[in-house]
Amino acid sequence: MALTQRLEFRQSQSLVMTPQLMQAIKLLQLSNLDLSAFVEEELERNPLLERASDGSEPPVAGEPVAERAEFSDSGDGDSSYGDDGGGDHTDFSGGSTGDSFEPGQEEWMNRDLGTRAEIEQTLDTGLDNVFSEEPAEAAARTAQDAAPTAYTEWGGGASNDDSYNLEAFVAAEITLGSHLAEQLAVAFAAPAQRMIGQYLIDLVDEAGYLPPDLGGAAERLGASQQDVEAVLAVLQKFDPPGVCARSLSECLAIQLRELNRYDPAMQALVEHLDLLAKRDIAALRKFCGVDDDDITDMIGEIRRLDPKPGLKFGSARMQTMVPDVYVRPGPDGGWHVELNSDTLPRVLVNQVYYTELSKTIRKDGDKSYFSDCLQNATWLVRALDQRARTILKVATEIVRQQDGFFTHGVAHLRPLNLKAVADAIQMHESTVSRVTANKYMATNRGSFELKYFFTASIASADGGEAHSAEAVRHHIKQLIDAEDPAVILSDDTIVERLRESGIDIARRTVAKYREAMRIPSSVQRRRDKQSMLGNALSAPAASPDRSRDTQPA
Image 1 (cartoon, rainbow, N blue to C red):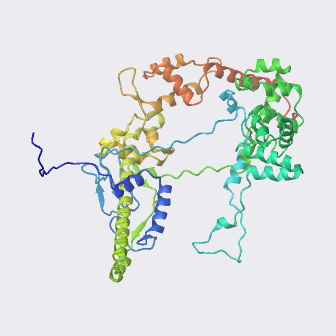
Image 2 (image 1 turned 180 degrees about the vertical axis):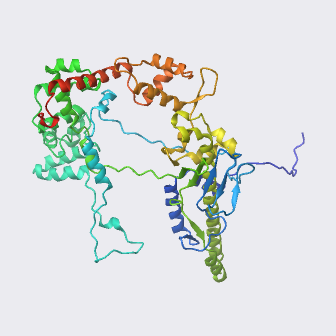
Image 3 (image 1 turned 90 degrees about the horizontal axis):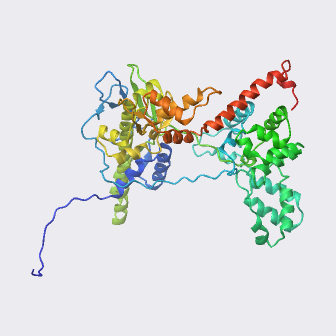
């Protein structure tokens, strides 16, 4: 073969991830709140972008507007979206969707959400049910969270300025570390003891616990182990009671000592919390050396204690879930799907400002900068509009596929996967996956994540239609909730009941679903229900004519 130079023309196709396409993909998987934060950054960065107000001029082409879709079971299944006032409607029941996302794109990196290990790792999960908040305390805490934050206003009147920052007048929240540091300054006068105390306070986690092993603290501080233990004993007397404990048993013991209730019987109970988690009341009575009435009162005192005292200070408040899509019953018996326009950012491209600048700019660098700003602003407006249309199409198809759920409940949830929705709306599975990420739907049955409606299928025992995994979990929970305390259903019995209902499922699958719903085994449930039944039967016999308020605490 001769080695010569030559020119060749070749034609090929390849997928190129342009910056604009990457931005559109990023916007698609953001929630409305995250999208608003992203748009705020773009408004600060791009001088040609401006926020659209309610009284502004009609938006330019491509501006995202409040989208909604309606469909009913009586129609042919086509969906349309647009204004309620009979304006232009775009049919997207078939044909090209105009989606800018090509098949074969890589999924974005998932975020690993780490979970903090619980303090009582060595205990059974039944301890989660031991400590419960009293109804009065729960109502008081709810009222406190709902109450508006008080603030002091300077200047003798409210300001209507948009830049008026109310957060500047709100007092900073007291953290657990600062609360303990204030008590440390009063409790110790020696600098060495304060140094040891501050070091231990820095090790306290958000629940108020210290690490179980403090052996390395003395070596790092250059102090003796006796000095560290002496400072720790003082720290454990700080407010709130139970703070700076190294285990759940020690936390409860500190609170009982504060109440002068740490007698030998209570000590034995605190040292055998694993039996309390298993509801093994007979073994607890043996270790504590008390009768049935005393052990019931002791368990009641344990339930009134706080297993995580540090959460009262500086704990992060849960963010309110804001739905991205609303689903309401329609007048014709169908369902009305609408985007949450209150959280959708509305931006405009200031073409007038760009035209005026183009007449005065002479430098090539400035022209290139404003040209890039115009291109980015126009692309952002189009990407926001495309995102709104895509979310509405996916949500409408989900509602159509899961019509039985919205009408009759979770028992009628159908098996559904991403491919079924993608094929119905002629999009790629990766696009549907990004749309359903971090999106929530508010329905007449509550608010759910869009991914909630995608469940695996379980075969039918009689060869009929497959069942949804979520519907099967709901059926299992109903069977367990309705079981007789004298006849507890085992996993094998649940399998038989499900097969009688037409659900073909294996025993290990039932056990997996039961554990995922945090439902204990049949042995543990038998102990729990027998204990509850015994308490209910013994309470009227012990004091038939006395009110609960007259019994000793």
